Image (tube, rainbow over all chains, first blue to last red; front, side, top):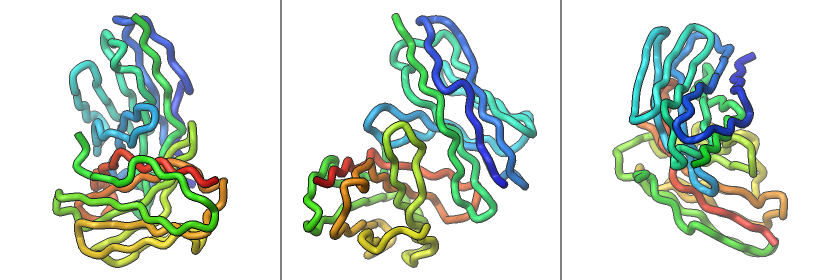
Amino acid sequence: EDQVTQSPEALRLQEGESSSLNCSYTVSGLRGLFWYRQDPGKGPEFLFTLYSAGEEKEKERLKATLTKKESFLHITAPKPEDSATYLCAVPDSWGKLQFGAGTQVVVTP
Amino acid sequence: DTEVTQTPKHLVMGMTNKKSLKCEQHMGHRAMYWYKQKAKKPPELMFVYSYEKLSINESVPSRFSPECPNSSLLNLHLHALQPEDSALYLCASSQTESSGNTIYFGEGSWLTVV
């Protein structure tokens, strides 16, 4: 059964304190792994798509990496505006996105 | 800024009302989606339209009725809803329905059923 698991559920960081979020997946034939950022009361904002093991993508303080079983979202020197819920998702064989439960990140000044 | 536009942003409706949520995208995408999201949960797929035809209906109750008038527009007609249908309704689009295409979400419509 296709499954996506994110950890930790919540993460509280001091401004400037780098950390990593994990997304592990079990899906046959990965067709992409997607990272989204979601602010309270708003729709998910697309961050990255990763397609193959070893691939890395960066955007400002965020860097996403992919292995055969998991993906990491590294947040380097976070700022309060990086506070959000980060969702990862993989499409199943029908193209339907399977979401993880998300990691809620709070960055305090 | 998202290129998927949803209206209204907030909607309060009674259980006997009929209302509609609207969605528009101008990215030339040929797949459009409706998702439902409850508090502190990930989005759940409701419907998929591919080339303006209903492709997937995730066993959604008939009180939710989707419509795709053209390749840029997607509506969700609401009738006789229940309080438990209160949620954030998200419209999304992708280039095609094929797995691996990035799905872009709108800001959502907050629905409260009273």
